Structures are given as C-alpha cells and as structure tokens.
Amino acid sequence: MIKNPVAITVAALGVVVVLWFVFQKNEDDRIRQRLHALAGVVSTTQQQKDTARLMHIAGLKQFFTEDVAVLMNSGIPKVKSRDTLLQMAHLALQHEPSLTVVFKDISVTHDDGAQHARVNTTVVVSGAHSRKAKSVDAQELEMDMIKVGGKWRITAIRPVKAMELE
Picture (tube, rainbow, N blue to C red):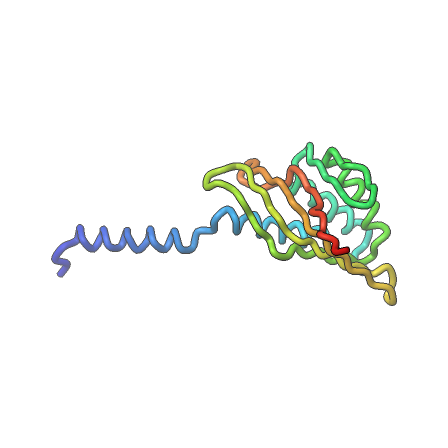
C-alpha cells in the first residue's frame, strides 16, 4: 500500500524533468547536426545519375536564407543570393563526378535563446576528377546562422585567412 502518493508523484515528476534535460538536444548540437546534414546533401558519388544530382541541389535550398552572402577565396565573386549559390553548386557538381564534404571542428557561439549563431569550422572537400586524380581541399570558415521556422539556416559564409609564416 502506498503511504505517501504525493511524495511518489513528485519524485516521479522530478525524474521525468531530469531525464528531459539530460536527453534534450541543445542548440549547439542542432547546429552541428544541420551542418552534417548539409554535408550529406552536397556529397555525391559517381554512380548517381544527373536527376539525383539535381535533387541534391534542390535539397540545398533548405540550408540557406534567400539572401545568403558567400565570400570565397581566389578571386571568385561574392555570392549574394541562394539562387546564385545553387547555380554555382549545380555547375560544380557537373564537373566533379564524386564529391565528399565533411565539416570538422565545429565551434558554435550564441547566447541562450538567441535566434542567431556564429559558427567556426573547417570544411574538408575531397573529389575525384577521374579514378586516378583525387583532390583534397580544406578551408576554415566562419558562418552566420539564423533560426527560421525552427531550423537553423546559413546567412553568411566567409573564409578565415590562414596565418602564413615567412
């Protein structure tokens, strides 16, 4: 027989609240998962048909705001819209039959409850122009993100200049 049902109910509620906090993902984890999902959408294989590649590119739309600004190295003009970015991605995927993208060392900075975040990460891109020639490129990036409709979207991407030794 239960002697103190109120104490048992309060204890059970306490356990539920603790478990909720322990297993709830924080915003940093959500941002990291979002970037890993982006890498999965961008990565392609040689076996994918053109239609599948176009679907990959269409899937990119969900990761960026309409007015995303992307600044790259090597004299590439600044990208000022999601549509332009998607066109560039389409062209790049036509020339690269196999592409793997990985985000490493993801560091997230934001205030709790904020709808904006700054992300520093290293993106590693490897591709194969043919079976014999493989290329690997790594670039440290700084990204601004905003939470729109419950999903984190990229609003700006900038390269982080590497320190050069003389």
